Image 1 (tube, helix red, strand yellow):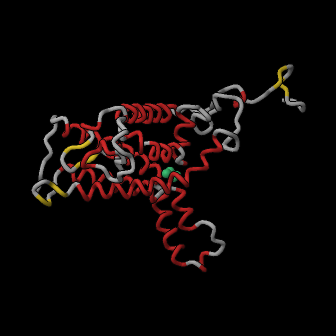
Image 2: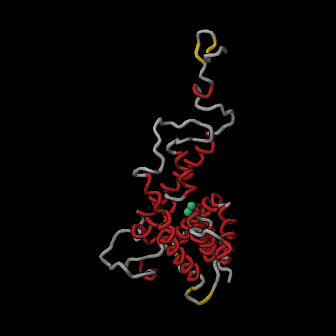
Image 3: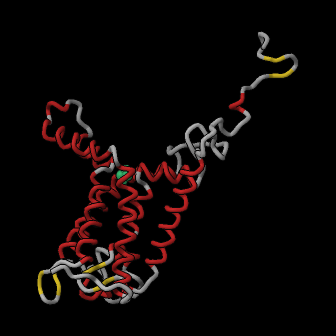
Length: 264
Ligand code: FES
C-alpha cells in the first residue's frame, strides 16, 4: 500500500465496507428462531383474542389472556365489573393491550424484534439492512419510553393473575389442588420473575438516588432486583411460553380434550 492508501491504481476500502459481515458463524440462526417463536406467539395471541369466552375457562381456572375479566359476559369469572352486558366481543380485547404493550416496549424484546424482524442490525457486527437509522429519538420509536407506565399497569394485571391462581384452589366441593392449580400458580410466578427483573422495576427501586448510603433499604432492594435483572431475557422467554401453555391447558380442559388431574 502506498502513502495515499492505494494498491497501485486501486483504492483500498477494507473488507468490512464490502461485506455485510466478516462473521463466519451462523449468526442468522438466533434472529430466525426469534422471528419464528415471537411471530408464532403473536399469531397465537391474536387467534385467542378472537375466540369466544366459552373455552377460556374451565372449573375454577381462567386463561391468563382474559384476566382480569372486566365485562359482564365473563359470567362467574368477572374480576372487576367495569363493563356491562352491552360488551359482546371477546373480553380479551379489553385487557390484552396491557401485556402486549408491556412486552412490545420491553428493553429486551426491542432488541429481539429490531434484530429479527427489522434487521437493524440483524446481529452483532452485521450491517443494518437499511441505510438510515434514527434510533429511538424520533417518532414513532420515541414512544418506547412509555415502557415504565406499562410496567405499572402490568403490575396491576399481575395482581389479578395471582388472585386467579388463588381462586384455582377453590373447587365446587371445597379446597383442592388440581393440575390447573399448579399451572396457573406457575404462570403467575414466571410472570412475577419477568416483572421483577424489568429494567423499569430496577429503576423504580434504585433510580433517582445520588447516594445509596442515604437509602440503605432501597439499595438492598435494588441489589436484589439487579440480580434478577441479569436474567431478564431468560424470564422474558419462559414467561412467554408459560402464558401460552397455560392458555392451551385451560382451553383443552374446557374443550374436554384433556382431563384435569385432581391431586386432592
Ligand atoms: S425491560 Fe423487559 S419488561 Fe421491562
